[in-house]
Image (cartoon, rainbow, N blue to C red):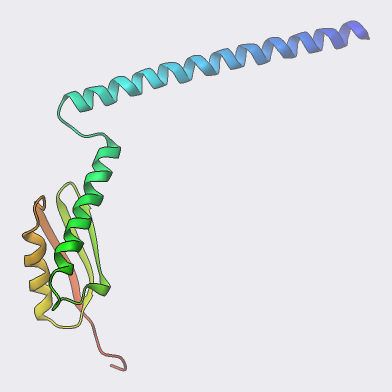
Length: 127
């Protein structure tokens, strides 16, 4: 009985050691290949995913700042999405003339390559 328990414990230790070793090797090779892939992307002039997200957030902030400078624009219901220089504007504005004004302001922001406007006219309550 003691021999069987000893064999079970030894077998359990061996299985645990082998699985930890195999897991560490898989993670190391995956990390090495991921590092190589990101180095290749960076070397080819592309951006890493983190850098791309930071650039998109920075462009979005610049667009919001440009809109904030124009006091005639009610930007409270406007959302900006930026991805690689392409800007998507969604939301509502109280006056139809503001749709074109917002689009022109966004086109003038440095770093914006294209603008898609999905702005709509805000309807008054009760209509």
